[in-house]
Length: 131
Length: 131
DNA sequence: GTCTATGCAAAGAGTTTGCAGATGT
DNA sequence: ACATCTGCAAACTCTTTGCATAGAC
Image (cartoon, rainbow over all chains, first blue to last red):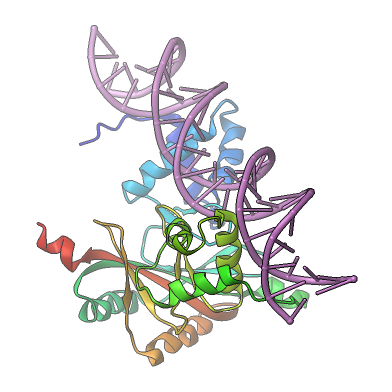
């Protein structure tokens, strides 16, 4: 439906997401991409991040504190947010396990379930060492 | 640490949460409690909802669209958000399963994991029937 | 040439906060 | 009496949007 046209800004945003595991906020993406495109605006960053998320080429992670975070890894996987430093980490679990949870949930819900997101809370290695 | 004092407003908010399964937003709570306390302010509602959540007497649910939602049920359980109507529903899964996931995640993470929240996406019964 | 994307700035939604006065213990 | 809580309003953060111009096809 949407007639997508190439843009260097979007390409740069996508490339940045593909090459980081830091799960940046929109603002962090903005600050980074601005090094290549000094005149880019936050609005453009948001528009493109949402576009990528809608197309399934990025994932939007809603956390309780602060803004949403974005992830260029699109294969199903989970995240851990450190309650001490706020950073977000990837967590690998069996693909089978992830699909199994959807199936299990479907059995217990009066409707259909397509997907799920899980956010773990804990303390990361670095923050454990500080204490 | 915090010296908590009784307030009718907080009691009313807590009672409302205890008697609904609608997972209301702060604004919905405000509109409801205002029937009993016409001069209550949104700020007070937010302060008390956050207080209750911090004390573990309510749960804050972050959804991608719109504001956070609150839930008076504090036993571990999951939620389904209907991608059609936006409503949030409870989903019962084994308590053992929920604890098992934390244990499994701990094995795969370089740190410690305390808890997790899972949000399922799907279509609720009513929305399925409309199509 | 036409249609989409961008930069800019303003507006919008959701939430928090400082303060003076009311309320609970 | 004293500490906490409230109402009010202003401020703040994050995100979206309208518009004129630049860029892609």
